[in-house]
Image 1: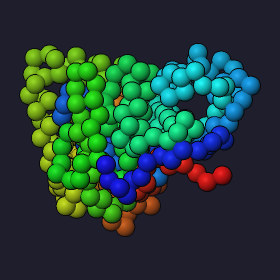
Image 2: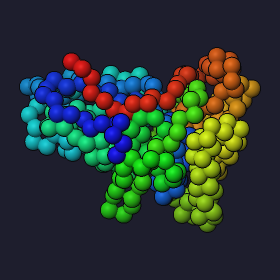
Image 3: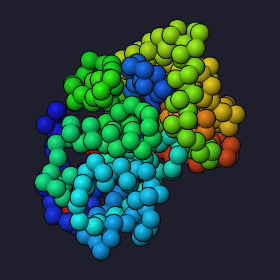
Image 4: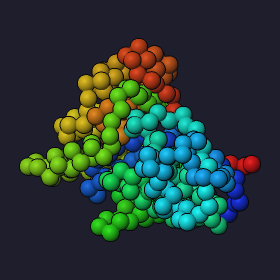
Length: 323
């Protein structure tokens, strides 16, 4: 683990924690099958406040343990047999938008619970956060949760940067590494169409298991591998080309959507490259703006009906807040 990240220290309740969202640049879906993925933490935040309570609730909901799978999984993983707690969550990340709302929530809750039970190392927090999200979704990879725990740019199953940690399941092992931040501004835009990550992952898995699937997976692998290298060396032209190619592959496996295609088309005059980000079938796109055309890109996407955000990579992952 990099010393600069630091562990989550021990704290007594009340505890507050904050985690960034995320944006997948290359490799979504294929990472579930062992291919590389490149993700960066975005400066849209989720914050949670945990206090002792008379009953365990989330945002004053007495039935949240039953109704919210992420909250239930976080309690089971990080607050086993603990006293009742009141949890309040505030987020700037649109839900079901492909921008890491669930990863940011589970990482910040797991960090707060970890602090209140003696502290937790960051590699253990990355493993725990992934297990919580996967328990709630039933499928997935640790790219989202590792990114919101680490901050900055993160590569899963690829790259040559500093090793951060390994995340494991009984049948798979993911290596997580740091990738150099080229210092670019990005634009993400939410289409307004919610989607189910689990449904999209299962649909792509079925497509990759069908005839021609292994060849498609190899193309995903090649694009992500080249993309990690291109971002690390700050090669905008190569990244733009690979964004467009990655979108073609995502379209081919059936997770694009007419609204996403319309947003990518609207972005084109002001973007060097763009693609969907996250599970697809709705959700959001990410675009690399032409230098100096960030405001124009935002206007084009807003006029096309999206909710756009100008974002920079958040260099710090999940952290505790001072009282």
